[in-house]
Image 1 (tube, helix red, strand yellow):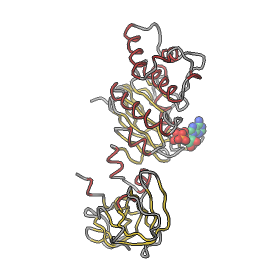
Image 2 (image 1 turned 90 degrees about the vertical axis):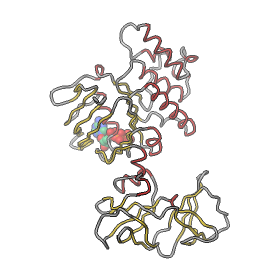
Image 3 (image 1 turned 60 degrees about the vertical axis):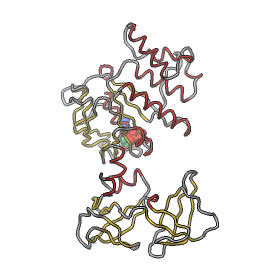
Image 4 (image 1 turned 30 degrees about the horizontal axis):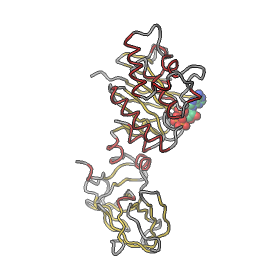
Length: 360
Ligand SMILES: Nc1ncnc2c1ncn2[C@@H]1O[C@H](COP(=O)(O)OP(=O)(O)OP(=O)(O)O)[C@@H](O)[C@H]1O
């Protein structure tokens, strides 16, 4: 099957600084991709290259099987069928909602165009606002107009640069869920840029993690969360307790005892680091395999993160639980839900053992 969008070895420099290096990625028709990474890792630059707002210094871009950026070929942005939704929505203030939505459509509108625009406005709840100007709209409404405007000309690919970041937290989750559901219904191919790990995991069929202009890991949300390929990828999506230890057959020996790492690679007796999610530790008010003094508590609402200093370890263990632990307790025991851990060689960043529990 022809891919909707293909990037081959894309490179981009700004004043000798490498903003993108060797970015290779294939996106299938109807796929929703979350592009995630810290500020400055090159996410927006990649979107601009796909849209044709910037020229790459190396590599090739194919849209619907046709080359749009390459050594000898460059298709101008207006001829690419790429839609964009920006963080600030970039609506035209002097145009009404309806005029904004029609803006990207060239020439006379056919009856089918009118029907599609009406359908989009209905799905996005914009009918009653059609004659309003952008300053009369809430942030969420403006976001929906920007989305309708980008979708109206039926782009081959829709690029969204931090489209939800200007919304309040409560509204953001709802708007995101509704937007992703609509894009899925329409079968639109989408790249959503975000720096928010949870947003990336919840929105994309595929999550692409970037760092310093390159792709660290690309995979389904489950793959990328459950099978991080490096300590960086692991920590980007989840807080971890990191316990140093020595590899033994099928396990890692640490100050908290031996953890099962059935598929462990590496030198027997060599170093390894057990990566344990705070929610893998379970509090035990009465007993517990390990026990220590509570040194900190961070209440998050549904969950609480509790720091426990155990004598064997230099750093406190962080445990995350939805169980309510009485405030007057000074010591807490804990167990592990599952004794299996991810093991990394922290220096080279290699995975020495995956969490076998999620390999099914
Ligand atoms: N026009 C430009 N001129 C010079 N340097 C630039 C330009 N555009 C981007 N850069 C640099 O390229 C790198 C990547 O920037 P980019 O905006 O793509 O990152 P980002 O991941 O989108 O960041 P953010 O999440 O903060 O928007 C940064 O170091 C940035 O300073």
